[in-house]
Length: 467
Image (cartoon, rainbow, N blue to C red):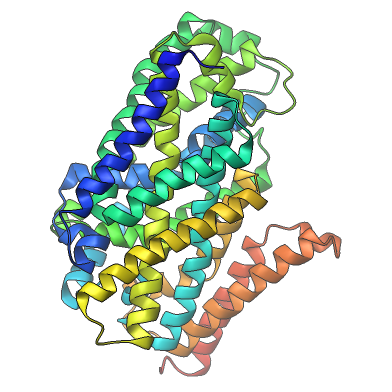
């Protein structure tokens, strides 16, 4: 159990997030402000949004657990994020922002339809909603687990508290609330993991000498996590940067092309010390707690045991910030899909702006509740997130790259490649869960990506590039 001071710091942080959401709700009245902050954000704001979205439960909590179990190879997850963020900034950000300005875009399916057609937009919307409910659920599950271990509550009660706070400030404050809270959350995360975390770990046995001599054999083997898993992650995670709707949303929110590009690259730069901090804490835990079978909450145990009162609360708030700042943008992303890409596009094209704004708020709350229910049923954070990453990247990557880099694109090829890939991935996961045959133990990314590539280029060649 925590000291009352540290418990007070956690609840003060949760209250601050709600207050920021309510404050932001009074400064916006349009859908554009709700989803992309009016397209006026600067470089540091964009970088914070990148970091707050991608540095979540799998990165900090799950990443530390993987380092504890497998050594430095557990840092591969965040390394893949550095690669993906850098490539998006260098190759994609300016182009996406330019097209967003030209067509007044708010969402990824908006972007897709500028080169393909409405049916491709529909299947891209469905894919994105499924993936982002999964992303949100993964972060809520991690936040619930952390609060459960810290406060001594049961998991459902802790999940309810975390979900209620996140849904409330996201649904009321929209993208502006996300931007405001992400300033705070990134600062807390960076201070907690890097500036405070590494020195405290060193003082309590996590010296360079101890890490290199007292960790289990193989912990400095760069492939100890397993080559198949690392290869699949090294492909799917960077690909997700090019098809993740929240990446397009924050790019549209930048005030110009230069800011969009620099924001992504600055985020990649900030990820490096976070990767070092995560690896250091994971290795320190391996030195202090050898042989722990369930390493999922090893970071919480490390913080509770070695951090002093006050700093302990600050560190734990930094961990919660990583989880909550990822969940909020994922909830908002799925809500944008529902209001902009489904309701306005197909049910009420002439909907009044204020009505669409209210619908967007309601959908944000609905997505948050659905994600919380998924987190309640599936508690394993990594499993949830891997499903979401695979669904999001397998079918959308090829059509997205083609539309940005190619002169001629085929709408039928895009539609069928996304649709068949989505069906393949879901069917493969189902067959794997039912243990139908040994072949289904293969990661669903590969059959899903293969179907997407073959379908897209097969139809494009068969029709001579015609739409």
